[in-house]
Length: 207
Image 1: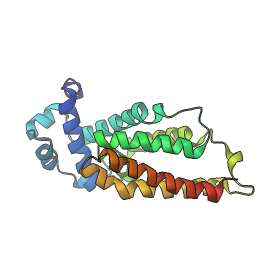
Image 2: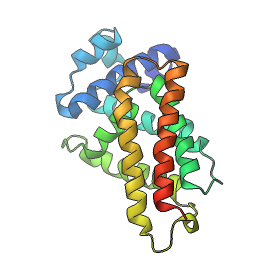
Image 3: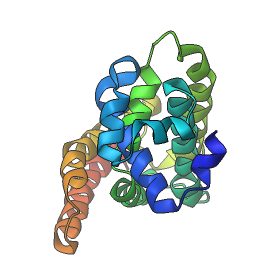
Image 4: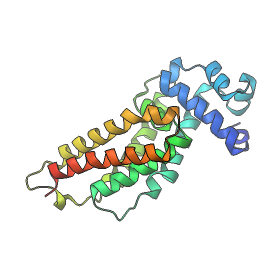
């Protein structure tokens, strides 16, 4: 059945995917309503279940497709040879901004899927989440040049501090980006503000 969905034109696929990811991201698996999904996607419920056998199949397809997009449009485009944490993080932030403009709820959906404990899908998600986290961590942090950090730095805790700070910065602006596209000037201001936070972190932890 999913093959029928993949044969749709890309615009309709994205409209249905974005509507479904939004609903699951906001309400979780059990509380998500297929009625809301079809309303937001502007299709009938019969059409939705023409493409997906049930809600479980739709959720797992969305997860796999979201991971695929992460790999193709995000992780694969990061410079694997770059060893400076902040240069790499800036690359990641720019790629993430681009992905959010096309799939506004993708990252929120993946965050919800990571903690989802609905009995119907919990086992199916367990290995998927483990593989995604392992791949993402390795791409971001496995080749970082730790000699740039000050002597005596607790690298693991420092990476957590940097991660939490920059993810928090992104989360603060994400809803605004999702609600309406930033103008070119607004995007430049956002990137400039992010650069300022990274400079503060560099001064705190780099030699």
